Image 1 (cartoon, helix red, strand yellow):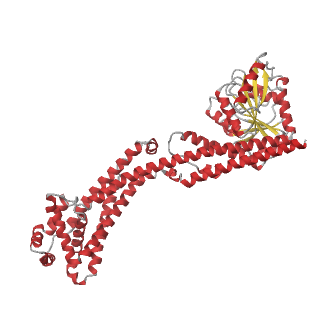
Image 2 (cartoon, helix red, strand yellow):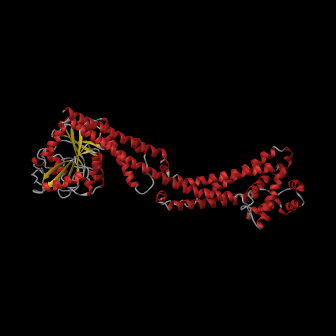
Image 3 (cartoon, one colour):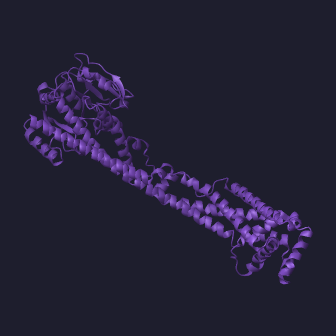
Amino acid sequence: MRTELAKLVLPLELPGVEQARATASSALGQLDDYILPRWRSLDAPLLAVVGGSTGAGKSTLVNALMGHPVTRSGAIRPTTRQPILLHHPDDAPWFTSSRVLPTLHRVQGGRVKDNTPASRAGVAPDAGAMTSLVLVADPAVPAGVAILDAPDVDSISDDNRQLAGQLLAAADLWLFVTTANRYADAVPWKLLLDAASRDITVAVILDRVPAGAEQEIAADLQEMLIREGLSGAELFIVPESNLDEMGMLPSDAVAPITSWLDQIGSDAAGRAEIVRRTLNGTVRSLSDRLNSLGLAVQAQQDASRQLEADVHAAFADASTRISKATSDGSLLRGEVLARWQDFVGTGEFFRALENGIGRVRDRIGAFFKGQPPPAVKVEVAIETGLQAVIVDQGARACEDADQRWRADPAGRQLLAMDDLSGVSPDFATEVAAEIRTWQGEVMALIRAEGAAKRSQARWLSFGVNGLGVILMIVVFSFTGGLTGAEVGIAGGTAVVGQKLLEAIFGEDAVRRLAKEAKESLDMRCDGLLERQQQRFLSRLGSAEGASDPLVKHLDELAAQLSDLGARDGQRGRRSRSDEGKRA
């Protein structure tokens, strides 16, 4: 699963994609920060993260649990900018490595000097505070438990909030601090509901409770916890108290919490149960997130396919229009028609046709025995006319594709400020080069066909290029799409060219040559359009990788994770039951 999440990309701006990206990022972070490290070392000390809202008194509470200042507290918000992890000296090897929270750089901290007030305790945050973790070994921490003072979950700083979420996701145990006047706030409850979904062990610490209101507020909060699926959460009340000159709470205000942590530290079986329950719940929660990511990948795939289909449709229309224009006689107009008529002498060949097809061969012979006008002028006219058609249709396809994408939010995001509504600057040059290559191929077809007909060698020696030009004209009128007066002009001259070629090569050969030449032209035109098309499709990038197998694989992984968490959870419950019976 980690491999899939690490390479997962959701590039298209679709509704809900930001949430999906955040889900993928948090899932990957939780795998690295908690699930994989914890799975590899089930016997490592518990990580208890102290989290909560701004000004809830988290740092003050941590200092009180230790019995002396260890982390900075005060009125400035946010107070905790750099997380501090307190552990028993014997547990140091578990945390000095990158076993947990591997993305945070380790900073070795020391005991605060005696008589240092809480307002100056701890390590002063620096520019790298958000990327580092201060480690402090303190005998006051119960062996088997580490306490991490985290930033505010609702901090005004985005970095603080993100780091707080990362630390809570890496916890085995939460000490969630709230106050008597803020225990119903939305942000804390969002995190508490996440804890419920992970089946994590939570201790809710209700701080600064006014004297006489403890029972009423505690009852209301307990009811809320039960209603939201956190009936097993421990609830501790810290009465509103004056701080001493060191900024410390009275020790008896937190005595129940200290006793609870000491009990957890001394109970190896209890710690193992907390670890297994939290780990199984986190794995099941991860399965749910993977299901949602599968849906997000499917949405990316569908959107990518639609954008791709829009581009293909625009350029397929252009390909169809080019193919039609190069076979229905449309090109046999203007300059091409004028140069063609100069070349063949339309009147003479019409008379030959009128006098009967039997005399065409004689006329052809006379034509080639003389000095026919150079075919190069017709070739140039064909190149110019054909280039205009292809460039025009390519530009229309680009404009169409650009408009289709701009009508789609994902397409607009891919295009950004770039204008792809026209062809690339070198397109006209590419088209001209491709046309010349095709014309050379047509000449090669004529040459190869003439070589097989030795009796016609004297004609071919006079006009390979001329016969090639005639074949091009035949190709351009292949479907005979002209109407009205055009039939008598362009269409008529094309018929003359076809009859001339048939007289030399035979009807079947001419049909085959025209077919090969037309297919080659269509292929080259499609290749030209394909390069323009790729200007759009290349922007889809990794969205094209959102394939059906990937979606299926994510679903399969989600199912396996869910089954793993459920089976391990059942095994843990049976183990607890057996222990109860033995007891």
